[in-house]
Length: 101
Image (tube, rainbow, N blue to C red):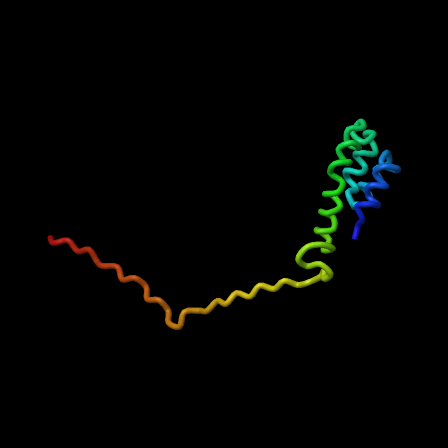
């Protein structure tokens, strides 16, 4: 489980190195931020407002919060009852069209 406090500390002190994004497993955007100077500084400010949601999303996606909390590998089985018909359905009878000659 990832902590919002740790994420914000990483954002504040090591944000120039995208540490908060790497902490949350966002390697692709972390590299992009690292190579572009946090998207020229704008990304660092935007992350101030979205970082809490990013932590919540990480924890939800990894099963740390939500309906399956505490049991990440819970199997969810769906049972579908399908029965076959007892007698085959007869084929439709086609009427012969005879014209009077």
